[in-house]
Image (cartoon, rainbow, N blue to C red; front, side, top):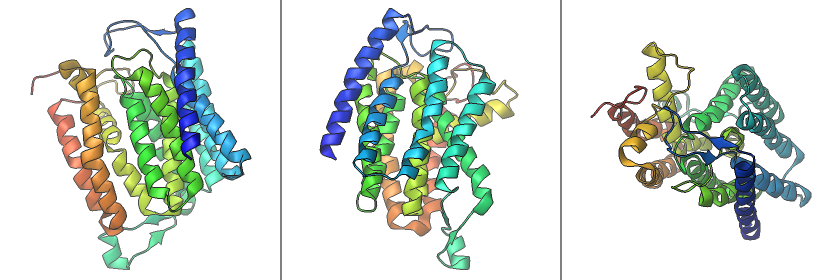
Amino acid sequence: MLLLFTVTLLLAVILTGLIRRYALTHKVLDIPNQRSSHSVPTPRGGGLAIVLAFSVAVIWLFFAHKIESTTLAALGSTLLVAAIGFCDDHGEVAARWRFLTHLLAAIIALEVLNGMPALLLPAPFDSLFGRLTLNPGWLGYPVGALFLVWSLNLFNFMDGTDGIAASEALFVSLALAGYVFYIDQSLCAINLSLAAACGGFLIWNWPKAKIFMGDVGSGFIGLLLGILILLAAQQAAVLLYCGLILFGVFIVDASYTLSYRLFSGQKWYAAHCSHTYQHAAKRYGHLPVLLATWAINLLWLLPISLWVFAHPSHALAGMAVAYLPLISLAYRFKAGHFEIVAS
């Protein structure tokens, strides 16, 4: 797995450089506007390097008989999202077509995975019914589709400052790889391949970013991480909760911001620059926000997810403990407000 990780990492580095050259030559640039967190035109679409490097790694795993065809098919559904994202990076695609493509990809993945995995019932339900898991049955399809589409859009929403989306994907995929290392070696290898691809891109995307990920990468990674969390939960039901905790920075920021905009009467579907991390970046800069995100992930969310993994009955309490300070940060930074208001 070390060789696979290294080769995938180097491939992502090389491909990102080539795509950056292509973007500069063909003027595929992200032009700053009033919603932007950057001030100079910057090449975009670098997430294609993540897509290609990860795809090469997964194809190798398949032909080396390390992963099954059903897993390959589930992962392959993400290419639909990458394709529509690539088109959107080169010329705007109507929102309805993007949404329909996202939904179709999520449904394909769920059909291959046979719906949502069994759900662990933590406290207080385990006290009432005893330790058990619940098979969601047909209800798992709409719930699973909602989860995957929301996971996908989390990355679209949160990919707005240098390095943050690639860092989040690197963190979550490495943590998942660690959890499944002794459970499922093939799933571990898949997660490590994603981590390597994101790490290679992050070298170019670290502040000050030389290229942006674009929709081709953000949507692809968002759906892929959602699928990987479901695959992990098939091996151990508690890993669904661990994955949601690891994903906490993106889940809370995007959900809080969208909720505030919706209930305050704003056009919640319109493009904006009012997430917690965007307000923080304007106040403190991209690098401090990125380092703070890494600190929250490593020093707060990871230990809580480890606690939940060791004590599955505490899953809901663990999620509450993990999310509450993040909600407080969103409130403090006025997430959802169009203009930054001093705290």
